[in-house]
Image (cartoon, rainbow, N blue to C red; front, side):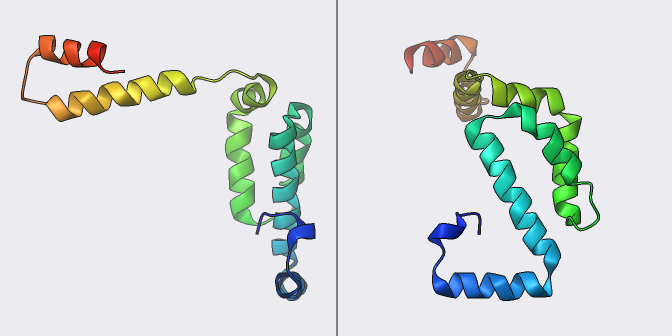
Length: 122
């Protein structure tokens, strides 16, 4: 569960307490996930490096360390995504639309019809 602890039902809270007692790694993973969510929601790129360093501890599950390693490899891009408001979502959407039209028309018509469909649909 990634939702806030205040919103848990009594049953959920009891289940998680038992789980965390039996497997402390799960509790640590939950805490780190909550921290990461806050970093992303508040766009606090300055805290990202410290979060990644925390994942190198032995009590952190392997999967979370692998995730943090991926963030570290693309650190500049992740930091820029947190720091800047703009993104390339609009461009990716247009590329996806163009590829869809191209796939639909593959082998059926020439470039001129493809050009007309791309320019006339929006």
